[in-house]
Length: 135
Image 1 (cartoon, rainbow, N blue to C red):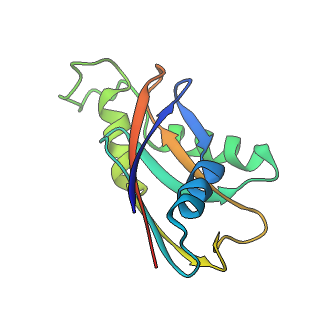
Image 2 (cartoon, rainbow, N blue to C red; image 1 turned 45 degrees about the vertical axis):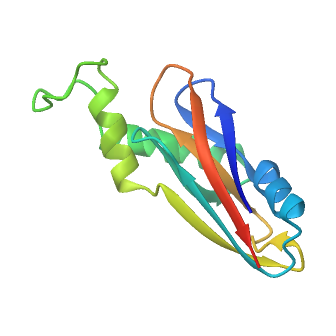
Image 3 (cartoon, helix red, strand yellow; image 1 turned 90 degrees about the horizontal axis):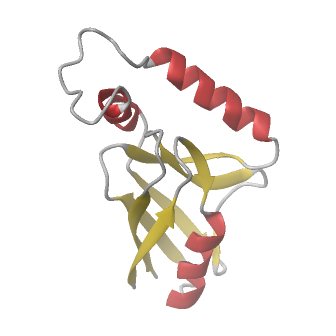
């Protein structure tokens, strides 16, 4: 089963989507198999990260923002603002697809793991994902 999901973000940052992905697995009736997710944007990415302590996600966001600074004079792709090229670089450094095993009808995540859509643009947006759950 393949499903298109839209996630409305509040802007730059990590937005947890674990329950939505588990919902696709449940709806597909997948007991053992694989859940594959792709974000259909070049300025957003997907990661599996700690879902218990929000400071871990805040530190990760701050670190990546320091690594890929806005307003670098070497950027030429700036038509959509100062966060335009940095958002593409951040997506290239992270992942745009994830594959997660499904075991006993559940995503095979660890105790403290969650699935996150990472929006790299400052303005909020509707982000589109394709999710496929297969036995």
